[in-house]
Structures are given as structure tokens and as C-alpha cells.
Amino acid sequence: MAKKVELPAGFRWGVSTASYQIEGAVEEDGRGRSVWDAFVERPGAVKDGHTGRVACDHYHRYGEDVALMRELGLDGYRFSIAWPRVQPGGSGAVNAAGLDFYERLVDSLLEAGITPLPTLFHWDLPQALEDEGGWLARDTAYRFAEYVSAVLGRLGDRVPAWITLNEPFVHMVYGYAMGIHAPGRALMLDALPAAHHQLLGHGLAASVLREHGREVLIANNLTPVQAASEAEADVVAAEAYDALHNRLFTDPLLLGRYPDLSAFGVELDGVVRDGDLKLISGPGLDGLGVNYYNPTRISAPTDPGLPFSDVRIEGAPRTAFDWPVVPDGLRELLVGLRERYGAALPPVTITENGCSVADEVAPDGTVDDRFRIDYLAGHLDAVAHAVAEGVDVRGYYTWSLLDNFEWAEGFNQRFGLVHVDFETQRRTPKASYAWYRDLIAAHRAL
Image (tube, rainbow, N blue to C red; front, top):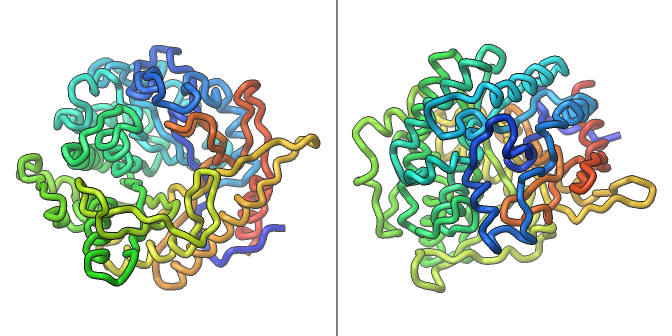
């Protein structure tokens, strides 16, 4: 029996996935081409040449996956809606067949007693919009609001809360600054307009959601930033990195202003227009989604170009992705958010947290992923400590339900509670699946 975690009554338990990572069916039922469909065709862009053409075949097997979630006893399922499945050209005509799929999924979840928590953008921008500038173009924010309106017209009556964007920081940095994710641009600091235009898209979409009486959330990858030493140069570098990774997105949402970016020698004055920040901050978020994987240690720069250097965190266990396992970093992050934003901080939901493990199915058909169980237990304990310190945390959605297409790593990193054989599509619940199921049941028994 899983150990009970001391979390509030009514705490919501869930899992998370993303459309391109699990759906497959990239050319079926009128779906348009996304930036990831284009990116995976670049030689060397994705490890071993893997693509999401089939992924976990969730488009056809969603019923099986909902049954797995029902068995877990989940309160909620966080998934994403593929914009090119709804609007193949990124604007204009709506593809009814694409919305039909999400309607079937939502109805299946509701029948299973699971509340849908859709993310409206998880990185699979229609390629037609990327051809016109993508998130570097202001117009994309307005096209996003139109797409959101189309989705709500079909599903808004059954879904109470929505996440506008997933990890706008990662999408800007990996997709537009460094080029290691779609759309594969390598613009470095010239990618900053993609930050503002994503936030503008959030603000416009939030207005649409509120018109429908729906709750508004946004999910970002956040990290507690630690200076490598007490030396002033390291402290200043850590502050610069914190401004870029965390505050660039959270300050406009919660405080209505951008942080000081002078350390980077750039400014957003030519991108931000009158009224933008008021729209972005709006009347406030109904919830903040926090995606946490590890802390970041920063030193003074060792190479020109950026005002910081990333330093490897030593002395911690490491995942198959070589990420350090530091559960207390999640408590540090949550408490730090409360201290920084005070009353402006809305209720928090952990919308992603999990780890990659080199899982294999044993000859007896089991998958013993004790490392993942220990990881999840440690991070849930950190959440409980943050709650005890006064942070309003409403739920926890682990990443991920299924092993899936892990972006530039292809199928080489496994994050799932359920093992997927990508040749046969056979689903095998791991030991962590049973552990999570029992933990949820134990919490409900309080």
C-alpha cells in the first residue's frame, strides 16, 4: 500500500500528456501540417530519425487510455488540443472532424468521472502560421484567439477550466533561440518577441475564455535558481537567469510588467504596445500551472553572448535524461513564488512533474520502475511541505501517463506510468502506475 501523503482534502490528482507526443494520425481526418511535422523531417533534428507520425496512436486508442486513467482513480486529465487538427491552416476554416475527436475524448473522460483540463497550445503550431513568422509575428496571437473561440464553441459547455499555453519559456528558447525544437530557429536573443507574442496570445485567449465563463490557467516550466557561490558575479548572473527563465513570463501575468532585462542588452519596447500588459495581466489568473523538473545552478559567464553560465549540480541522483533529482527544489520554488508575488499569486497546480527512466519489460511482463516511485514520492513530499508553509497548491498532474515521443530525443526517454511498445502499441502499466493508484486511493480514504 502506498504511503499516504499529507495534502489537503479535495487535492486533485491527475496525469498530463501532449497532442504531438501521443496522438499520431498526423494526416488523418483533415489535420493540417504542424511545425513538428516539418521539423522531424530535418536530417539529424530528432535522435534516430524518430517522428510523431504514429507516436502512441492515442488518436485511435484513446478509449484504452481513458480506461487506464479510470483505473488510476484520477480526478483530472491534462491533455493538449492540436491546433492544426482544429484549424489546418492556422486560421479560417475549422475542421469539424478534428473537433469531433476531442469531443469524443472529453465525453469519454466525463463518463469515466475524470475532469478534462485541456491545454490549448503545446508547441504544435500550424506550419502555415510559422511560414508567416510564427510567434515572432504579432498576428499569431490574434489567430490563436480565433482558434480558441472555435474550440470553446464546441467544448466550452463541458470543460470548466483551460490552460492557454504550455511552457512558453521552453518554446521560445528551444524553438526560436537555440533551434533544438520546432520550428528550429536559432535566433538567440532575437527570439524575445516570441515571449511577448505568446503572452499576448494568452491574454487574448483569456478574454475569450472569460466570455464563456471558463477558468483561465497557464502552465510554465519554472526553476529555483541558485548562484554557484556567494561571489557577486555569480549572484548577479543568477539574477539575470531568473529574470529570463521565470520572471519574463510570470511578472507580466501577475504584476503587469516585465522584469529588468538590461543584463541582456535588450529591451521589449519596440514589441510591447500600449494596452498589451493590461490585457496579459487581465483580471488575474484562476490558477498558475507549475511544471517542475529540477533546479538550476548559475555562475558568472564563461563564454561571451549571455550574462550567465549553467553549472552542473553535483551530488544528486540523475534521471536517464541526466537531469538532477532535487525534490526539495519544488518546495523551494513554490515557497519562493509565494514570497515574491504575495497576494497576486493565484492557486497553484503542479501541471507536470516526472522523470525519465530506462524502463524495460521483464520476462514476467512487469516493469519495475522503483526509481520513478521514489522520485514521485519525494516530490509529493516537497509539495506537502510547501502546503504546510502556506502555499495554496490545489493539485498534482504527473508527467506522464504514457511513454511517448519525447521531442528531439524521439522515443529514447521514457516518462510514463505506462510502458508503451512503440512497435506493437502494447500498453503495460509499470510498478509506478500501481503505486500512484494506491496513493490516490489512500488519500481519498482520509
